[in-house]
Length: 415
Image 1 (spheres, rainbow, N blue to C red):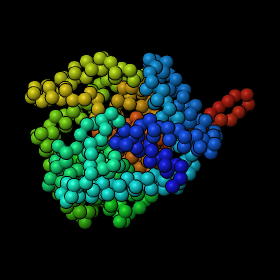
Image 2 (cartoon, helix red, strand yellow):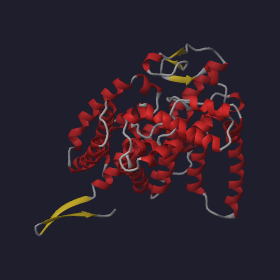
Image 3 (tube, rainbow, N blue to C red):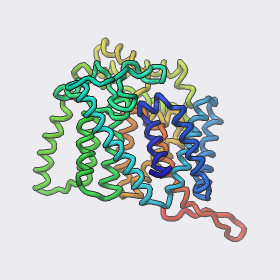
Image 4 (cartoon, helix red, strand yellow):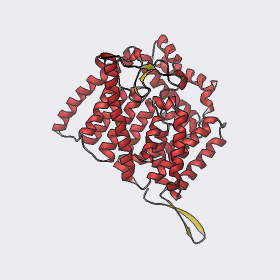
């Protein structure tokens, strides 16, 4: 296990894991310590060009908005993820292998986690305890030694056939599926692998999360990898479609017509509202402080009523949706509404370039990242930013400066 592998794992813990919420400060301290050990190896033109580009744009952002603690914290995230990203630039095999190993660990932990939860619920009660709310974890989350078995008793049996949905290390199955599907993408596209026993483990792990988004993304990945238009594959596609509908129908029906209607509308409305707010101040965004003040709350309620009433949603459900936590589900357009279009473009280009470099499927990888950040608030989290910095760093590394007669020109090669 190398320093960079540990760093990637810690980035993931800070990107939706319960431990990342509970011990955020300690994990950040370890990240800063490890990146301090790594910086000697990356202090080069690669790192300097990457940090100069990000710092210049970030200063423009800070000039246009009030500076808060979160402004500096976010820049620190850009800084330490850039150190790790700069280390991997030019080391394609090393990057893919590190990503695969860390994500496979998430897969294995998810299986162990599910076995422990099933054993606890159906066989013999284990010493599960409610996590300490003071640590920043939602009340009622049960765990075994704060490492395994995260679940909430009131929703443990809400999955298909009454089986608990697997959350792994994370606060909900919808976050776990992000890293499971990323493992599948790395395995099948970055490494150009096939459906071996490890990839099948990844598929099964996604299925037992019972996440609608997870199952849809997994289907897109498998479809993009294997589907070719011929009679044989049409039969396989038909059979897979039936299997897929059996898996996702209960969840989709519940979100549209059942008890989870409000939950489904919250996700839809957050996307719509974040987009509207982004377009209201397209160039420089609103900054972080805007989302802590009453201004966003008023806009949120205004756009929410506008959307839901236009859809003829019953007033009782509209009021329940309004009471839900503001802006918690959608992060994609929120990146733009916080930072503005320049940093929003860097995020999109970074994700696209990672996919392009390793599989020539930049648009597919970007689309999947958009889906992930549209359904979970992980877009500005360290792991997502690490991928952005790596993809954007590949671009800045191709900027070559040279003197020609008394003029300085910039040549951009092989973009």
